Image (tube, rainbow, N blue to C red; front, side, top):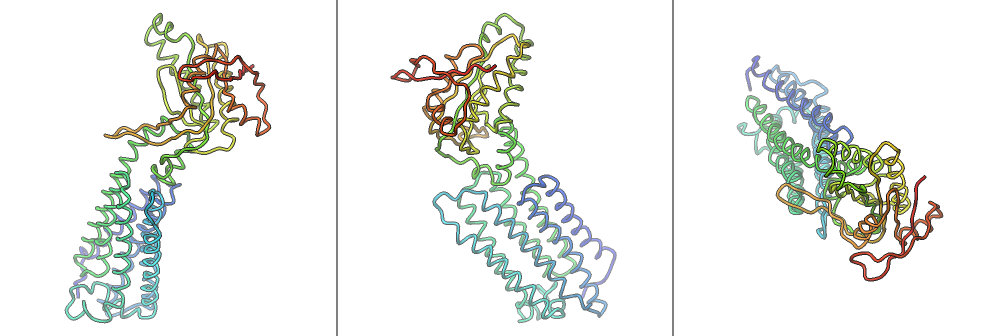
Length: 435
């Protein structure tokens, strides 16, 4: 038995506060993320478990086990189940490619079931759990007793299964941010769980150590995510950012080839303007131009793929897919012209729109990421933009066909066929002149 002292009570209190503080930090950092909420629930109940189980040990030292002792295991159960649910949700954000994921998902569910068995055994034998299991590791004649193993085995097997599920995740070669928090979890959780069975004086130390390992992994994850967020906010709409937060970067933005539309726009006469005006004036007009176009892109849920001086290339239909991508793209182009050319700007804008099958995905390395889009439609939109006159939107025939299929009307008028660089045949085009 341990001696009841102020320090003996302070150590678990600190451990509980650390767990509760981490829970609050994670849920405040990303309250909309189901993954963060699952981890916050796990940490909250870890904190509660520390308080309740230490109270039971103190009661045992005083020669009294309260009638609610069995219910305390329900708190342990929720902590384990929420922690395993966190693993399950993280697994869902990591693309598996051709790897089969059913075994890992099954392992998580079995691990959660074993924790339920542990809770049921605790309800059936509450006194045995308090006397033989809590703090029973390394106790003389207890560690290998049937009573100790009755509660220890379900938890041990569940931890092994959960650890195996994490290792299977790591086998998918997740991005560095995902990998670092998974490694932190797989190392930290055994230390946290050991707080149930280690002798009282050392149990809080191991629990706090496990929490700190978990915290280091999680903090490193959020640092890497923050750096990535700087990239994402330049290119993606708020809707796409929300999807990335829920599903993970790789899952939301893995390579894909499908029908989408491209809008390319640039300022007319910008080169001469830049030569004849001060750099402050040039930067000012670019800033106004980017802001105005960015507002329109966000409104129509497009994705800015490139900024190149006075040129911008916008994808409509990636990463978020839209059946009406062609209609959205032409409406976006029309809004760009109308909002920019309001009589207050010294330069006009020209826009090209094209549709077709395009391959999109993240490329890059050494800390730099780019959202790539490859396909004939991308080149066509760029060439049409070069051909467009001031305040004009040139639209490819395939885009117009897609719009007609929806029954929409934009006042598009046939324009002269054009010979464009990179295209062997003349390209049929349509013109839109926003009012």
